Length: 479
Image (cartoon, rainbow, N blue to C red; front, side, top):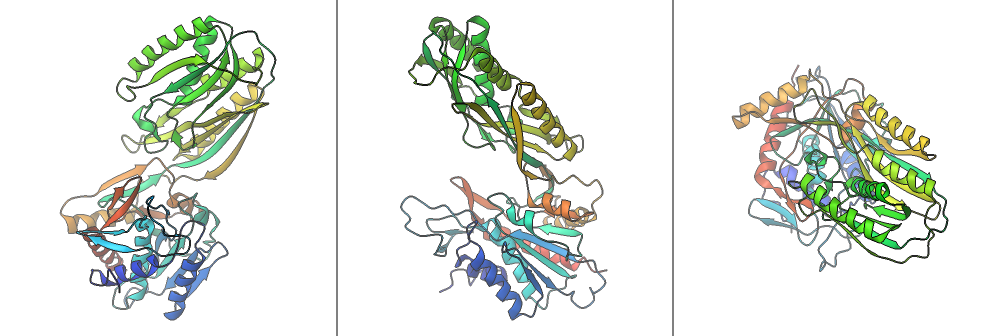
């Protein structure tokens, strides 16, 4: 029995429930893509389905809108698949168990996939409704957004005629996103040589940092464990002869490291005193953002030889001099970080130190500037760099007719103006703006309420209001 059948808007919740019965985690999208293709065939709509499982569905304009410019409705079909520890569901094979709690739809024991199933459901509702006035529709539904936007990277958009796009992938009602950062991962590899050194081995630990997302929380001024470890090691080296054995920190290059560890060979008393002073200094510096930061030292053992003096100096220099954090603030949007980077994952092997960083900017030339800066530093230290996972930013458009129309419709419906903002993280809009020159795009959507680490309760009343706004937007696009 359908759980959402009594909810309005009927078509939206009908298609959302149908889709929720199909497993659609990132990398497992063939079945849902085929379902979307079948939807198009049943209605006689032209569609394109590619080898990645991306799909584009086309619908002609309704009567009176034949001369209007096409509008792109865009979202992604994949979802994050997480479940409670006691949930036995196989999310690669089984659909979701939907339920309602007051004003919210959720899934029992698992994530819901409102991000971004609601975009797909709204697009299908538009395509299915013959009474709805609208310009030509190009519904672009991508795959694997949650794991790197691979679908948007690989999709062929040469058949699209629209240059205004409604991305229905925002998670806060009343917030219009109009710009995002582009990014890249930068890997630095620094070769090291090792030799014996007669000094005690000690483990230094930097801990107690808050961390956070390297895009949306990079402006909070929080300490980066990898960077702070560089400062600690440099301070020890200023007062006693130091040999680095290994150093590590961070788990993801897009997360601010909450700590780091290093094995060193150095005078134990001097090292202990330096770490004590560094704890005091860092607690003063970060008393607001990271009040529990701490630097500790303890005796340790290792079978690995220390690095030689040159390798130690180079490794410490990389950690001290590598740029990190906010680099440039936007002049267009007050309070927006325009360019930043995050020292994310630091590891040590027998013959090399490896540092992976996440670089972000909504201005392509500044992103390239940071990549160049890191490459120059690493080369001077005798290392090599490589770039991966590069994606374009989405620059703010001072003149956006679509944004103006959306603000007008929202204000008429809600009685107040929406919040127009940019985000210092990657969005599919950035990839589409690079592929479609002249694209005018806005991202919006209904409220998704957070459960644990994912926003997995979807507000019914918010869906109703956003759908009403979408219908009115399409109506006002009459030529």
